[in-house]
Image (cartoon, rainbow, N blue to C red):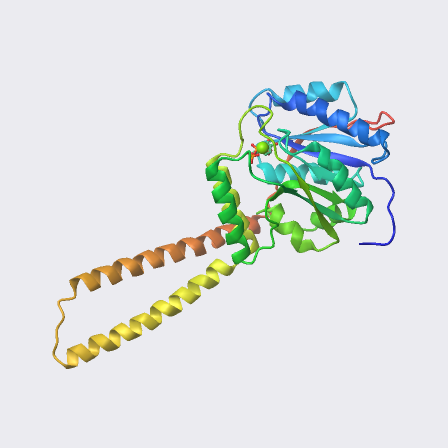
Length: 328
Ligand code: UDP
Ligand code: MG
């Protein structure tokens, strides 16, 4: 860690919201109180804010957010033009906040992640860390299915060479320096958990408790979760493609052996009935070929999307009031 102690930061909390009408007002008041306390304890500087990112909510979230921000300049609202997904929503918030903040912490809108951990994040920041990862203490609040799939997923990610931090979701602090570095990455297939560790920088890990959702239900449908999981692997590693080459090599060796055996049998005039063998080999090879094509197709699709250079999010409106009354 660096020797030089830092100045108390202007902190922005970036909070992505997708259909969070049940919880957003409670969240706003809890976060507001926490920031006031932190400011009083001299842990954050004046001008620290809570920045909500409305990720194309279809319910009343946006109206509620505007109401919250109208009465208090501690709140600002980045309203995205549509639903771009959690990762892009966080990115939109961070990129907007970095103009004003010394450090940004991304946190979910549902108050599942213990907000008292902010003190720990800030302590690591003050020690000179540019990146601080929040890691959950346990998975009590998750169902058996989520627990099992999450564990298997992290194992698989590590096996495939990704440097994700186990049990770290998107509760993390980035300093302005880290945010500026992140801005240099232009990839459309965004998987922040895998990307940020590859940037380097002095980092630290803090542990926090996870609670049950304050209200509402999870916005991560099984489909969204699977997409994130596949993106996580394909955006960080080409090892699956290499595995295909390996598999192809072994299948080739196997086929050479089978050919030799077949030829020897033929020369000896021993004709094996061989229906089952033929069936199995044909089906297996067909299956492997299709699977391999699918995996390669997954990457080709990614390349296609990347070459378009589409924006990762579009901001529709922005509500932000400066201390001097300047408006955006
Ligand atoms: N979220 C978002 N866009 C989406 C899905 C989710 O901005 O398309 C936000 C959501 O409002 C919440 C955070 O991402 O603040 C995490 O989602 P959720 O709590 O539903 O996920 P879980 O905790 O169940 O994994
Ligand atoms: Mg949640």
